[in-house]
Image (cartoon, rainbow, N blue to C red; front, side):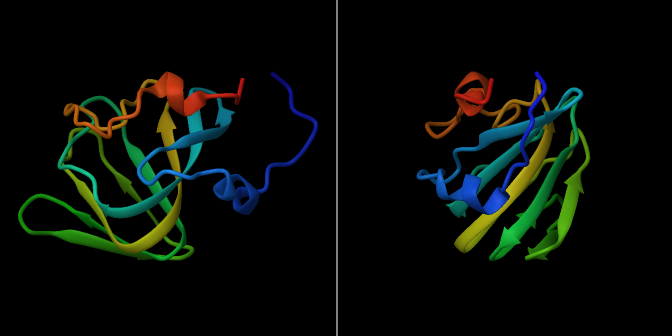
Amino acid sequence: MTRSHSTDVAVELTQVHTHWSPRVIGQVNDQYIKVAKLLGELVWHAHDAEDEMFFVVSGRLRIQLPNDEEVVLTAGQFYVVPKGVQHNPIAEEEVEIVLIETVTTAHTGNVVVEGTVPVDRQVGNFR
């Protein structure tokens, strides 16, 4: 699908009303571009076959990693979680992010919890 307009990430983030519920706003080849608002803790999980990129638009995000390691991101920073690596994102205050993930990436990877959002619901009205 060809789009003849630009996408404003800040405007797209105003359309996100539920924490931990990614929303697809674009696609580049086989990668979805998503926006989300985070608050609290999601769940330890991994994506066995896909990398996952977290780009912080506003706020501060901690990503817990194995062996008591963690990455701390602030506005303008990003981190790529390699495929197969367990991780747990934590937002002590609301964080706005952009995610870049393969179109097949399951929200909570190899774990399904109450807040897991299927990819078809993340796509919503994008198509």
